[in-house]
Amino acid sequence: MSFKITVEPSGHAFEAAPGQTLLQSALDQGVLLPYGCRNGACGACKGTLMQGQVDLGSYQEHALSAEERAAGKLLFCCAQALTDLTIQCKEVKSTGEITARTLPARVQKMALLAPDVMEIHLKLPASERLQFVAGQYIEILLKDGRRRAFSLANAPQDDEVLQLHVRRVPGGVFTEHVFTGMKEKDILRLNGPHGSFRLEEDCDRPVIFVAGGTGFAPAKAIIEYAIHSQIERPMVIYWGSRDRAGLYQDALARAWAERHPHIHYVPVLSEPASRDAWSGRTGLVHEAVLADFPNLAGYQVYACGAPAMIEAARRDFLARGLPEDEFLSDAFTFSV
Image 1 (tube, one colour):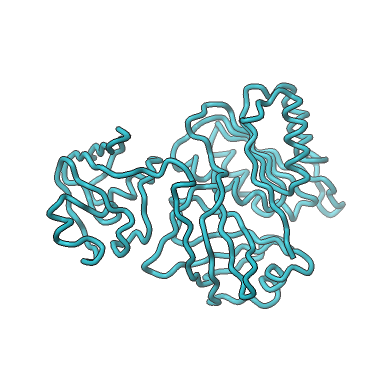
Image 2: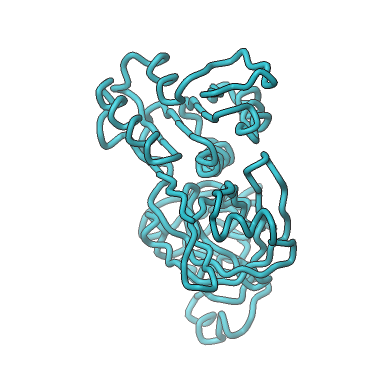
């Protein structure tokens, strides 16, 4: 048995299973309630119980005082429904409504995905969680005051750690450190989330993802969010790289396509080496889209990668009928 939770003033509704927090139930179903720590310590997810009964759960007194409890306040990250509920809070409607924060993070894991791509898992303090929308990015704060931006490669429902795909930039202050000096358990400072790149859920157009290199990271986050939220709009993923090693999570993309009939995957290599034994598509990744779609008028495109790829895709896709406001992009600028 599950309980119906109605959110005011939006009128949005979701189902909450017994024993599951209201926050987790809402996020699982695409309802973006505000949150911070997710463990009853910060009060960011505070709202009002208008109707029904809840178990308030375990929380810290400074985050929910006795006076607030008497006024019907509750913390969504701790409270569990005992009946159908009506709750009141301000939902997160856009990325601009999520406040960027500066936090410390420990390097929990490092894994070489390709000769020049490192996956980094960042763990926040136990009392903290970072609320973000799939497709957003964070900035790593360097000691000299400079910042380096990286898209989050994990979806928000999987926020136990923050995942980054870092490409090595020759001479890059931070990326060279990642590959030559960084160790697990190192402490970094980050600020985020940032950016407005996200899946437009009020649109029902078929989706085309065009990712170049580590532009796969935000696309991965959005696709995993869409799968989790049971969004079944037709999706085609075009992922381009110079060689086969650059398709560093090719097996994952193929698994999405195998398990979900509405998802298709097209890998493209621009300069395959003989050792790649490549029999798939070749050339520029956005030109593969043009070869497959003579008319883009009915589609929505999400492009992630180097500025030159983004600019070429925008120009050529609009010439094929794609409405300008249906081209959404996240351009990566690599800094030294």
